[in-house]
Length: 143
Image 1 (spheres, rainbow, N blue to C red):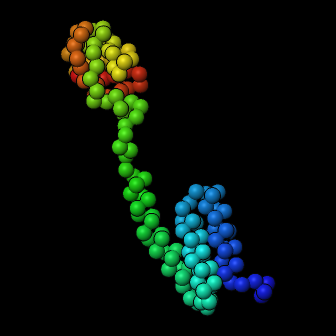
Image 2 (tube, one colour):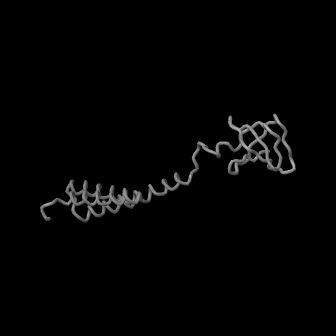
């Protein structure tokens, strides 16, 4: 075991840290693996063990301190492209069958939808253009 250079052990450690990265999908393991690769480079350049460990710790902590907040910020942002029912909210539709608080039919995005008026006392007649404010199941809520 003494015949193996320290940089090889750092690469083994990097590979070992890559396994839980793949299994658990925790990016912190990847950042630790990058720190181990940096320590392997330091070892290959002739640094002693203390410097290698310091390089590992500094690179790993720096990556975790910088990358994690950026990743968390990107994860919490909503996608800019609305899809599914979110894309239908706010669109205009045409009333096909009279719509009131109990129901009716509209044509929305080329499809026929059941619809209900947001204001239960309001009635929309055939041919009127209405705005979709929400989707509840398969029913568009209009105003």
